[in-house]
Length: 153
Image (cartoon, rainbow, N blue to C red):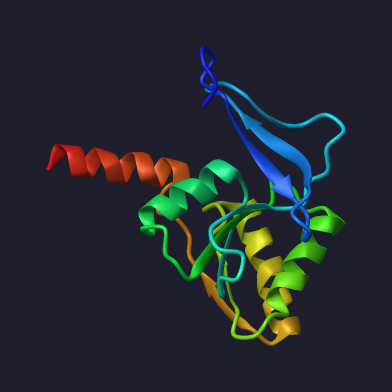
């Protein structure tokens, strides 16, 4: 978090680990680095076999928190877009042995479109597939609701 505005920046990296750009999010705005390229935000062990794909880095982090940051999981964000480099990076990850793609996209029409794309990649790669949608609009809202339930007992 950056203060005083409370913004969050999350790096997107390519298959070699080079930073290609970053997602930016504040209390009232969101964006991507000018001149940057959306590939994938990645949180967790690079060799993980369970790949949880979300639309935004804040949702990847929120899902990871709800999921107890599993050691077998890599939490991924597409940065709210679906660039050719994004799809190519997911295909590279899906081609590894024993991989399961988890479409953890938003609970709305666009989230279903992305889930369909992720499922198509899983079918083409011959890997596992699972769809997990939050009860709320996205995983960050789900985390806030979860924390509220924890707090309220």
